[in-house]
Length: 178
Image 1 (cartoon, helix red, strand yellow):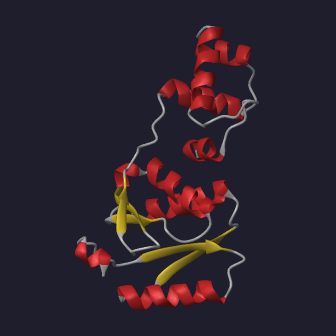
Image 2 (spheres, one colour):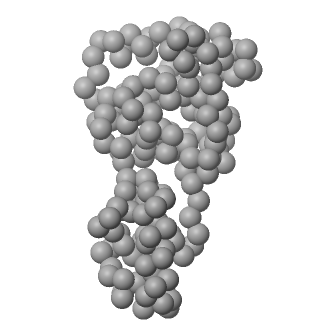
């Protein structure tokens, strides 16, 4: 009912759930079918703590529906499920109409701001080279920039959550480069 108040009309639903889901998850799918009066729900299963797989699965669903109006709902499931859904929504923010969750206390629909994840071409290139285990010196040569500029890009990428302290890409960075 809260969705109807917001003018949200549902034609199709992608339901992302844990591979270790139980009967409660099956019941939730059936409840959603009845609630939104849809005949079919696409159900995708992922490992509940595999943030990269969750992000990719949700991102693939968004890309498959990019010609339609897309709403991302992040209420149910483990925190990793919600975070992966948010990361995919942020990475595809231009395709998303709204992101929301429903409060447990009052079943109130709360809209989450769309925050686009954007990388400059240079930072994207640094990530691509780090993914291939290139050293700072190799990145410097490849990009024709100073070593201090490479370190500055890596520092900014680490502060933004795209690389860890050992210069390994995070799941979000991996997703952005796919």
